[in-house]
Image (cartoon, rainbow, N blue to C red):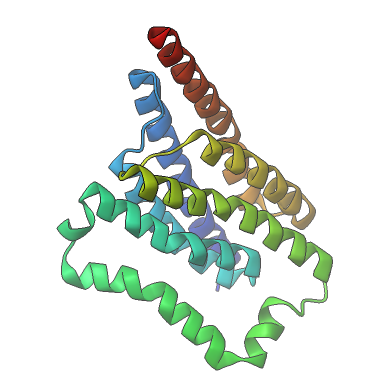
Length: 214
């Protein structure tokens, strides 16, 4: 497949990820508190699907692993928002089965998958492991968000979600710089400001809430 086509898929996925952050940021600035809008999760799911394809075409296991883990959390948040059931059944089935089909494909390929994703002459094992660690840390934010939201009984984006985002993003940028991956560098760099600003908004909201109580 053409290098530019693969790059285009990755850039479009990152554009959607950046768009979700921009929309969430603007909504939170207007409300003076951190919000979790439905479109944030809708764009997340579509972008995740595309980035998973990009990761496979790039032979990048770190990207694939990160997207497969967070995929179902996006669906859970859409269900929590009441928008998941609004999709046609065939689309719900397609979105729900994609990760299962991807894992099944990896298992069926066996040795070939390992060779394709790990045994790359120009990519040392330590760098792959560092990339996986970065993606794992970045993905943990959604695991934390899911557990926090289940406890709260609604879809929310807590402060620690943004702190974990900032940490994981820094690791992925280091990995991308070494790998010279323009898609990851641009995508992660764009989110840095939003992560920091959401932390500030959340802290300011808690401070004002505390002042009102006092």
